[in-house]
Length: 183
Image (cartoon, rainbow, N blue to C red):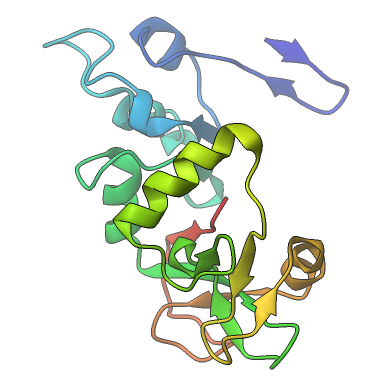
């Protein structure tokens, strides 16, 4: 427990049903949920995510649950939460060349001035990693322009969250919102 002037922060861990089920919680933050075990007490308590979410029922409509994690696979809790969300938002950034918005995609990263890197090129790139990669940049999906690392901060600052299947600024009516951003 961490006591602050205006609130208290309680810390629990996913393998202990007792720490999860101790008290009512209005704001629940679940970190790295794909790494939680199946159950804090097999056969008795249930999975740690559901158990933690039950702590918010005292606060009904005012409770907030924040769950974040690096997804592990399509059967993991993070992916399942993404699929179940009524409003899925991705972060779009503008190209400094053409201004078109796009989602950053690893496939657009280019090494050594080549276009799409073949498996053979990846082996060469991996071999060069010890000596340091040269000429790494991002290629715009719209205009094909070269985007340098030094331009990334401005792109991200000018970015926007956009709901899947909706124009910028519009969002579906939903009680859950999921966010995805490239790291």
